[in-house]
Length: 256
Image (cartoon, rainbow, N blue to C red; front, side, top):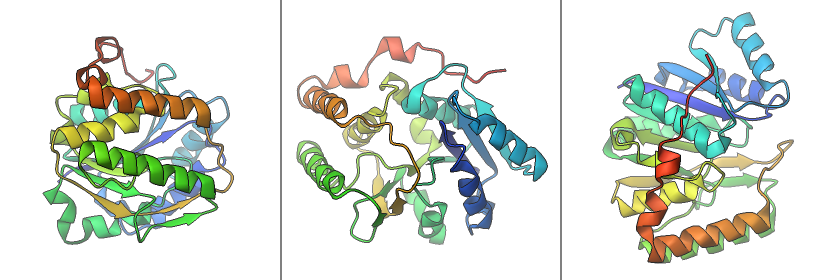
């Protein structure tokens, strides 16, 4: 089985080196044939920091790409998924480059090849055995509420609508359904709803999630409105949620 790890980054110059070190020190680094870091046109020195690290430390398994345009987090998922499909990978794992998630949480996923029985293995910040560090309580309770609402409307037990550590079977992604989803931070909401609606085989696994020196890009009020819009579309206009010809026909490529 060919495994790809891709790491989306945007203004992560302070965190990305910690992420790289954790990967190199982990027991699962050997599982990945290739590790790509996708910079979404950072305005700080993220691209230079990563490039210098790869060259100076001779990290042959790592590759650095930069999106042609700023596609936001959702759009960066699209370039990563496209890369996995185009390069004939069997599985693709996403780990956010801001050092909130921990690559070591994948150990149990690889144990006894558990992942092979599923289309999606989803990291959950709010599973029973998960550990949250410096995560504001009001955001924990807010997530409990939206997880509960999403569980009710999908008839699935959902404990997270989008963490920064997930694994997907590439054959499940091959029709590129994700191209129709928003490019912003609500991409994962649509992804989870699609997973439920497509009757994909998935499970949640507990993760450690910490907030230290990261800067959140979530504006809570506007984000809540977008979440409500997505929920409304899922319940009443599902086709409009999963089909967007403008987004699908947008070019998602790397700079030369």
